[in-house]
Image (tube, rainbow, N blue to C red; front, side):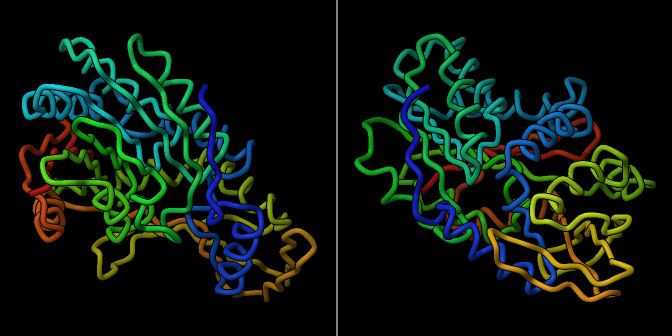
Length: 317
């Protein structure tokens, strides 16, 4: 594993300040879900068991199809893959493997995430692909620092391939700017999104991926990390937002609670809902519109058999 650079936005002080601000607004934003060792480990297990993106009969097919479209669009020469909000880097590792299988020889890869444990795990995963040079990982809060270009300068030669897998689903469409900030003309971006199919029962099927015991255990761990114990049951519901349909997870404490973040306390009144999760959904049309509005040329959109996972390949023009 190469060295890891921790940006000021992901420092303990910045994390503390951001978390306190969120708690005062009765939220535990998604960007805080993966920072702790225990929570990040639980999330990895949860994603492996419940995410369509890791289902070989469903989401994986969309990622593999998008990888083939990417390889077709790539010019000759060196490739530098940057995984933005890469999580554990398993999707990036699969993409790197496809590039190597296709005969690409000069490949470097950089993991970027808000979680130090996940950047370390992703760097190890990327570096396990033979012939791939894993460069210095970057720990950064892309909500606080949407322009990532200065953090990854100087640019390595060749074509940049930036991945933004699952990010606009967990952080919202505005997170797209973190990926586009790294693109020069001709560079390529892979974006995945959780889709909401129009088939009957689709909303119930999607809800089942969240309204389950492992997800509640993970989110309770996130709450416990800030001293919110015995908060009660986490309930999930569909909501509508300007960015489209969103699944919301909330807990409403029956009695007053106090969250403690490194000695700083935030009171939580009884009966006041605390939002602990939100997950945005797109359609193929809204995903295409989002990318075109960002000034990108959409080359391909792969959709999984269930219609719940979409992976777009776009080029900076």
